[in-house]
Image 1 (tube, one colour):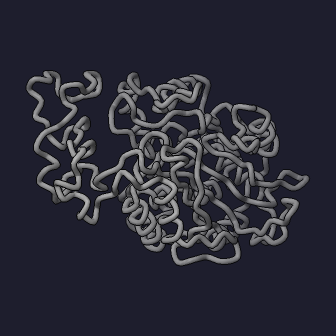
Image 2: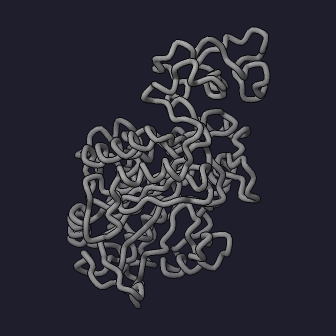
Length: 424
């Protein structure tokens, strides 16, 4: 590890082996991950199968209603006159999406049919009733759902945003909960596009008071600042890989959503200033403030809820990652959560060597070019919120290598969370 990485020891004191062992054991006991899942509602109405291959209706795949007008720079078929109109085509649009005669065809008798008269508010109410959110941090319901809300970015009058309470990492337990949540959402018309994202919260449990101060915390002692520094440095080092491994775009020109609500953090180096100043610098940029005025929230990773003591050590640990796109796979979402958790464990391991030096100026400039080519688009609020990834293809071999390096690095932190490593 020493030969592959560069560390600085003269700025922040490295952990001793005994300290590293303590925090490794402590984090495995107390670290929790909560998930925020976003879905659109009712913009796509009709069959919940959305024309995918397992639809039992024989009418779905007779022909494609949109192949004559599909966009040439995204359709894989060069000659539209020879389009096979296959459901495998990313531009395939089943006729039943806009069918005006669902009653006559018997579609409304199908259990998978959501009629066009159903409003998003009704669907959201059904989802909320089914998920039974606790709306309190002192009680965890069956699926761990804390609240069900709307988000102004989502179609369907704010769509539906589902917040789960942070829980200790266990792959199967999280997978089963998220699987049931997604099943309920899909059954009630939830769907995904580039407006949807998946946020993860990594924290040690605490109970805030009315004035925002911490009343109760699971931390037995403040976390040495160097651990959070190295966590942040790992995010900076693997910034592109984290965006790549959590991208869910359907086309090579739009591999992921835009960057407006997940601004890059590569420019924020803590080596000369420390993490309290990094948090202040992120909060000083108005572009990083959310619509509720919370400062520094709209970053790839943010420390809005994290607090520090006078010496700069962490007195409250609560980190939010905003890098992942919206996703319907509970296995993939759970593996993403395991990755975030494992990054913190790896930060502990590396802190015995000192503070991580990310890379030299030349490598940093190349990483920035790769990131800008993958995650971009931060102006306006138009309907299209994709990143323009048309120029990213040349970087794919390099980012695949970087992502493999990232997954290999954290492997020892998730070996007991099968099959997270295999999924990643």
